[in-house]
Length: 323
Image 1 (cartoon, rainbow, N blue to C red):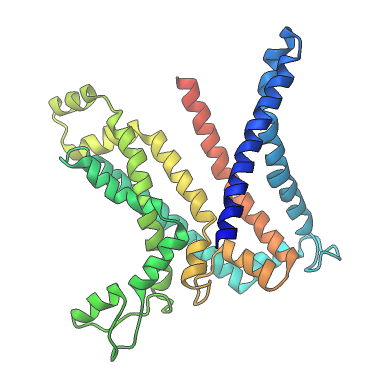
Image 2 (spheres, rainbow, N blue to C red):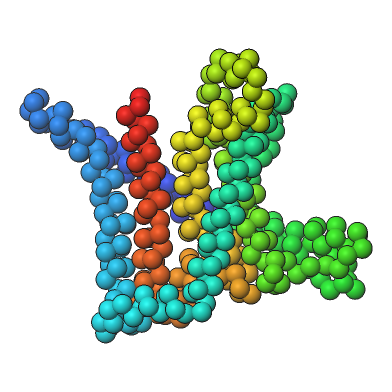
């Protein structure tokens, strides 16, 4: 234990020291240049480490993954689009696609919608800061940690045994039969989705609350003087004026949901019809050693995320132009 702790401390010190050394070395190198060259060169010098890291850990692996997706499981024989055809026709993959769509619709819709409603309501309550902190608190928990917590909440035992799961204990105390939340296919996906909603609602609340507070009070008061009620103010003033923030929050949640893996892996391992695209990719690559199919699924996942990222970038550019 002490050896591991020592290793961690040394790694942190070397990492921080390395960053500081690189900073001073680059700064020294720029100062050696003629004065007229310094302004155009300086930004690229400081961007160079980030570009190097992105190239080494993102661009090159992406190109390599795309290349491997056209080969068989051992990366020996060129199979062209066979891995992609398999990904869109295999029954388990179709279940994963269906589940991901379900996650996208429910998690994005409920977490953003609930966050928006809470942001508007909490703008009027006395203990706003404490309430926000309480709802935002789950964001401090990792997906794996949240999954472990919810495993105890969803824990199931037969009806003739004492229930250790909070949810089933409540249900049985009301006279109903306990539910296998993680094994019954009619409810297990919704049980997993509820965890992500619990985690992301606080994020949506905090961001949208800041946007709501940015709406000028004069606009709200003018609407009230014109006879608008709270419902009309919400739909015709609040929502339109913070629509750009809603889009940013929604796209952020969408990207997160598309990559979801931890919750499914910890809670069910992708069994009982809970498979998602990311968990299927991991199984194909590491469990079944099918590098070709695993790479194809990774490329499909990347292609699904790109349009969402492009939408976010366009939105940021529009906001910059308005400023």
